[in-house]
Length: 281
Image (tube, rainbow, N blue to C red; front, top):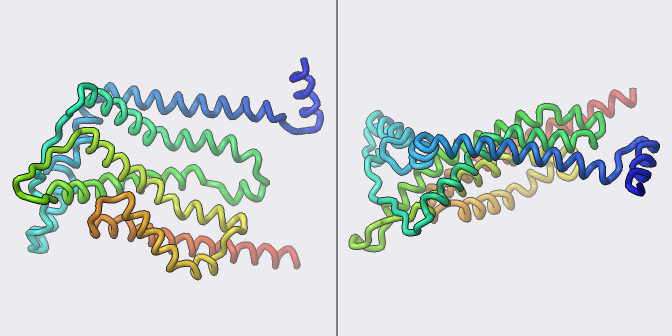
């Protein structure tokens, strides 16, 4: 009775109660989790495609990236570019290793595939709390966030992961030591590289919303460019294997996205100035 009376009072005041917000959030989370689970089940049942071709793809020399590099090698007459050997084997040293990695891989694939819907549910919960002007400025957020997410995931999967796997498979302290990687280590490395790239590619969106709220400006981003470069290089070193090429491969697109964020901030500032001038007139 007390809860019903509290809700009625809130509705009379023209707003939603805290409990109503929690109820709404609960259903958004339920639908999001349901979408991830459905996609994960489909991925789990499609073992030969998802696991045999997608997850294990970068571990085989006929992978798309390796074939393209060999073609580029032949075109440029640079044999070193061609990756035609990956001197390692995958093993499962734990009784539940293959099954647990099958489950983990399916959940990650389900999360990646369902990401646009999940973010759409999150946006549906957040957007009613925004002003009309803010909602209008953030139009297309679901599309651009999803696009950058998939671009980052694709970059991590087709560029960063294959080159990192190639480096680690060829790295040896001594020729007598064979590289025999555990399947859990391989999949964990692959997932980390793909998801880290997908998250880091959200930098322009983060800058857009920070600039829109007035927390950062294009001048501030320019003045801290050197600091940003150092931070990006440190993050790249943390999420990639300890080779310079992999670190530069992840750092370069992030730096480009940072510069794109500066341009976005400039555009927002110009738009705000134009709106202020129109209001004065």
